[in-house]
Length: 327
Image 1 (spheres, rainbow, N blue to C red):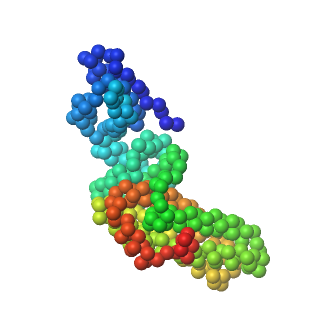
Image 2: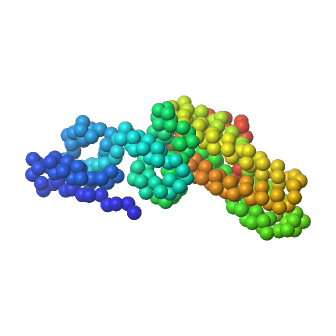
Image 3: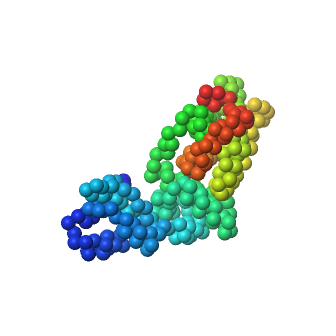
């Protein structure tokens, strides 16, 4: 639950006491906490003082700007240098998968107030300093867990036809295929042989074909969206997503191969299909969540609005999946 801001009304306070009282309350704020101030004049001198003494450590927002009184908030944030050091320390502790759940509470405090764009830029700096992408993917997993608990899906209010809107709509379809895959595999698993589940085998092949068809979705990301991010200096988050694509593609292709050929004993067929389905059912939703809530908001934030018409033309040239809504 969002914590209420601490409020300080200066209007009836002697002027010589005001600044000392403000900084007294500021100093006891924890990271992420906010001080709301009500004042009887525009607080420009105070803002300049914060800029001089706490640059990069606060967010300043107005709720009311005169003429009788001003209301503004000052939120305490960790500056980028300190935040990067904390994230680097967190990465060093992520040596096993068990660490993700063990460090989740600590990660919440570090990651909860960081924007997708800032996280991407910090990840990039850390990799340039020697961290591996494998380590950064573990950090993404932790950030993913924190985000799933603390927020719903990001709303960007994009119109149909916008390249990111199309990608996100395709994600919904892919997640639907994953749900169908899990149900279908469960039925196949309980059967004794191929002849017992003809409809389910047909459905399995249909799902696998569509998951492979999603490679066009990846191509639009890799050939159009990622280069646009790289133009503005964001290189590592796209590289992490490319690596995940490279892990997902062969699994989907293998599932289609097995589903269409079925040239092995049924028990071996079930075992292989189950292994591939479990992998895809775990990794694909996680990958999609990261793109929907980290990579895509980052793209909307940093790619100039005037570039999106040209981006759409490039996406149109590559083409869409057979399941793309409105295709």
